[in-house]
Length: 430
Ligand code: FAD
Image (cartoon, rainbow, N blue to C red; front, side, top):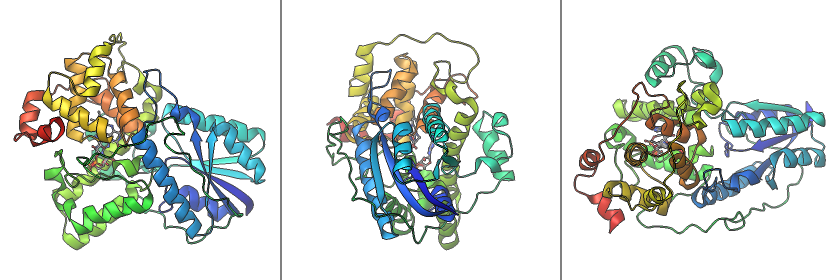
């Protein structure tokens, strides 16, 4: 057994079903849990937006508080640092005379680059570094294809995976954790990270609060209390209120809950209340989430190119700043688009139906470089997730995993189909 190990938490802010933490506890006498506020996450992107906005940051701070509480309950605490992970993680390694760093394995380009830099720095000081795949429903090693052969069409991926693979059981919560005395938790505020404080809007679909405890509360509400899971397939295209869809995305994005844990709870729910199309459909949607992760592993940087994963090179469209600002502020010629964009601006959330429409409008009606839209979502969404966001945007821009060349939404028809009584528009435009 090695003496001291470090668990570097990133977007896996939970103690249940966290293989990284479990493996560290099994291999080390003492474990130090660390989170690093990566300064690069609070800079502006090349598209002119903050990489991380205030909704997500507020949610993250709450999640870290909760993680510290859970870790203290089993004997440790969370050490929070700020800077470049490749500088800060080796510093902690030296300070605590550790032997090994354990972390979540990344798939997207920038995250992978940071992971590599940390690994290189640790290698120089002879520190071991091991990563674990902890964010998908299906483990990458259990897929029926090699990463390079994963089908680019979701249906083909889903059918074969469902038929030939199994979902691993989630890991139990650790009961104890031995560590040196950890200092009291010190967290930066949203303002200290260079962002504006979040203002609550009473029209928001949900009062979001970060953390594993809140994620579990939400799951119990959606499953046991309201039994909304049994009607999910019929309600999931809604736009108003808490229960038309699960709202798990924000917690999933920073790993306050794992999709394997949700899957286990779906199975328990089905035993108790019965199986139907809706109970299956939530797993179906979680598979979309997996799919984009595996697509990022396969195509890597391509999802950030104007031509996406398509082989033909297209010239990117120019940017019309006025149109971009009007879209962001909900001042376009479509009231349906405006209502959705205002909801996003004031709450950090937008329904899936809304996201599809505003993205299609951006690409097809405004005819602009889709990456500006994706970058605005990146900074604004409370549930921003690199693979789900850029993967869905590329899909809607016709340069991703869609069999069709162009996915065009007739916005007026969509508004009429999904907001027939104009309730959603009245809620946000009044
Ligand atoms: P539910 O309908 O309850 O679905 C359950 C879970 O399944 C979600 O929490 C999510 O993890 C997953 N899921 C559902 N639909 C998708 C999908 N199309 N792609 C990937 N996963 C899915 N989702 C994010 O989590 N982060 C993003 O940054 C993000 N950006 C998006 C950008 C665009 C342009 C579009 C069209 C979709 C985007 N999505 C993103 C996917 C989807 O809109 C949200 O996951 C969903 O609206 C969140 O609400 P929910 O948790 O209530 O979803």
